[in-house]
Amino acid sequence: MVPPSSETLLRWPAEAIWEAVSPKLPDFSVEILPAIDSTNSELMRRARAGQTDAVLLVAESQSAGRGRLGRQWVSQRGDSLTFSLGMPLAPKDWSGLSLAVGLSLAESLHPQVGLKWPNDLWIDGHKLGGILIEVARLGGQSYVVIGVGLNIRTQAAEGLRTPPAALLDWLPDMSATEALGRVAEPLVVAVQAFALSGFAPLQARFHARDVLQGQEVSTSDGVHGLALGVDAGGVLQIETATGVVSVHSSEVSVRPKAHQEKI
Image 1 (cartoon, rainbow, N blue to C red):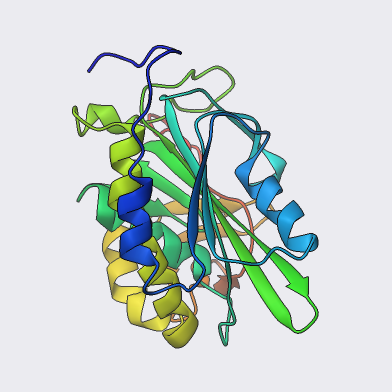
Image 2: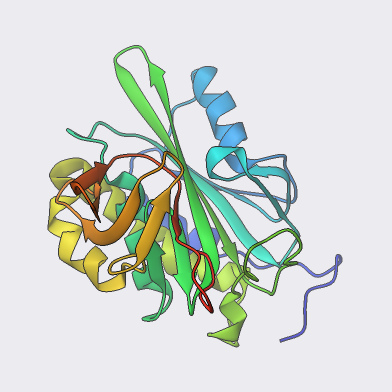
C-alpha cells in the first residue's frame, strides 16, 4: 500500500458510520478533523461547555494525544487511527468499561489481537494500541469520552521497551479509514451493552484474549505474583505469596526475566 501524501484525500466512511449508528444514538454525529491537539481533550472541553451530544471525533493527526498515566501519543496522518467517542452514559458500575472497549476493538480487528489489562491492545508480544477513558460529571449526568489510538504503520520505537506493533503487518490492505469503518459501529453497540449489563457477560471472551493470564507480573504499587485473569467486574486477580490480591487500577507489567521482554 502506498502511504498517502499530504495532498491525498483520506476517504473516511463518515456517512456509512452515521447511518449505522444514528438509529442507536439520537443526535449522533461524525466529525473528521485534519489536525488537533487531542480528540479526548477536545471532547472534554466541549462537555464542560455543555455540549453533550453523542459524537465520534476523528483526527488525522494529533499533536498532544494522551495515553494512560499522562503518556504522550503523537500521531501522524495515515500512520495511526486516533479518535474519541463521546456520549452520555449511566452504567450501574463503571468497572470494566476499558476492558469492554478493548474487547470490542480486538474482535473487530483480528483474531490474534490480545488484551493487556486494563487498556492496551497487543499482538504477537507488541503493543498495537491503547484506550483512554475520561468522564465529565455534569450535574446529575455523566458524559464519557473514550479515546482510541491504533498503530496502522510501524511507529518509531525510540524510548519504548519493545517496538510497537502495526496493523499493516497483519492486515496488509488495512488503512486508518478502513480500520475506523470496522470498529466504530460495534464499539457503540458494545458501550451501550456495557451500560445495561456491565462487564460480567464479557468475562469469558476477555479471558480468551488476556495476554497477562498465567504470566508473572508486577504492579507499580509493589504487588508481585501470577496473573490469574479478571473477575466478573473486570478486576485483575494476582496470586501472591500471601494470597490472591485484587488490583482495581494500576500499571501492570510482566516481571523481567532472562530472554523475556517486558510488557
